[in-house]
Every structure is written in structure tokens, then in C-alpha cells.
Image (tube, rainbow, N blue to C red):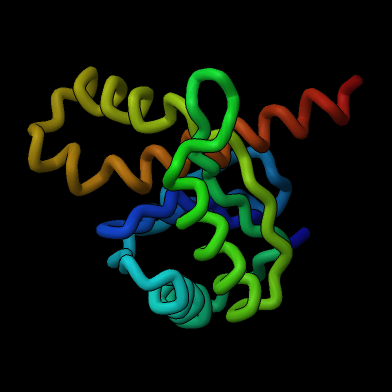
Length: 145
């Protein structure tokens, strides 16, 4: 089975996470430099995937939603990035609600007693891992129903 790549998009940093081949476990992959230019950010992610020789079947991108469930202003940037990335990679893209992933990541890193500097270095890839694991768990529940 091809793996699923999770992406937590940001203009400063882009967190990446990867599923195992069976789509059960999400693991942090890395954090790459972001860009305000969606095409440049997409090219950076595509280069990382090429460099790592990953067999990706789906890209899951966190979509920023407000508490009401409607798209936040930043969702436009995320959608532009997604379009550019799909053009770069020719891999199907899905969006998934990213509400609270950064909060969960911060909380778990504080519990692990990481310093503020350590937390800022890992928050994007940890948030992305939480996002991807939530998606994998939801898909597993749907399959069991």
C-alpha cells in the first residue's frame, strides 16, 4: 500500500508526517522551510519527497477552520498551496480539519518537559502527526462500521 503524507502548512514552516504502509500509524517526517509563495512552498515539499523516495498515494493537508466549522482566512493560502502541490507531484490531495492540532502538540510537548525552543522546533511536525493520526483513526472506524 502507498503511504499517506500529512502536511501542516505554514508560511514560515511546513510540518510533514507519514503513515506506515498499512495506514495505521502516523510518524513525524520533518519540517521544511515554508514560503509566502504557494508555488515555492509546493516545490520545496516536492523536492523533499523526491529526495526521500517515498511512495505516496495521498496527501492530506490540514485545513484551518474556525470553531463554527467555517474556513478561516488562512484557508485560501492553504488551498493555493494544495493546488500548486498537486500540480508539482500529481498526487491526489484531501483536506482535513486541523482545529486544535497545534494546541494538542503544545500540550504533549509541555508534558514531555521540552523547552520553548525545543517545542518551536517540533510543533509543526508533531501537529501534522496528530492531524494524520486523527485521519487514520477516523478511516479505521469507518472501515469497522
